[in-house]
Length: 102
Image (tube, rainbow, N blue to C red; front, side, top):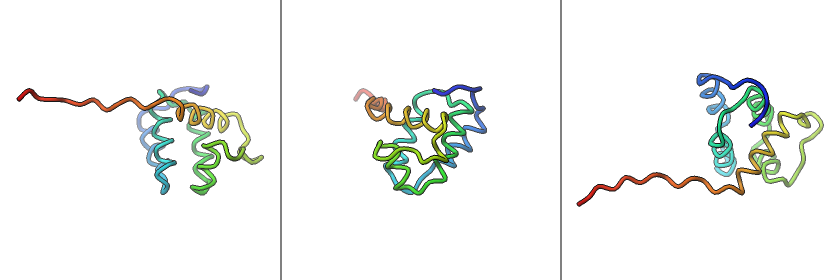
């Protein structure tokens, strides 16, 4: 995803917890972002900046309805928004189903 070193598992766990939102649509988009692969320190900084927004403002950015305001118009934020928007066009992987023979 973005540039910078990959964050460790403890930092990733804290970031995932920090990214939990009250709006289901945001949660689904953020989970798809995490499913794309490793999260770098630049990605983490972009996500942290976005988490200061209200849920509806965040959803508008994710869906491309609005553009980042001057204080959010930074490369790491734009990279996260690009990745989230790209994940919307990629169908999620189907869950693996384990079937037992009768």
